[in-house]
Length: 72
Image: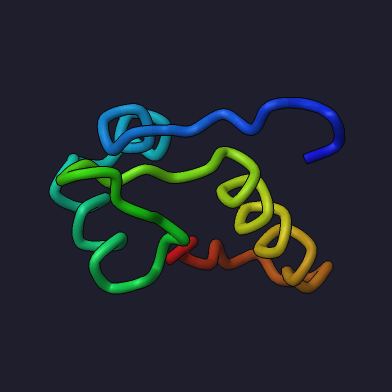
């Protein structure tokens, strides 16, 4: 974690970040599309895991590829 605390996001925060509904985030968590974990009945996601997913998608894009690939 590079000496810093890793921020833990909840469903509402992530839904707002991606501009999708809470239900979409829940579906992604249940389907394993997000590296999420549960505390009680609440889904939680590490900010560093989201950053890794975004960085992987950005670096895997081909230079001449103008199509936007879905994140999930």
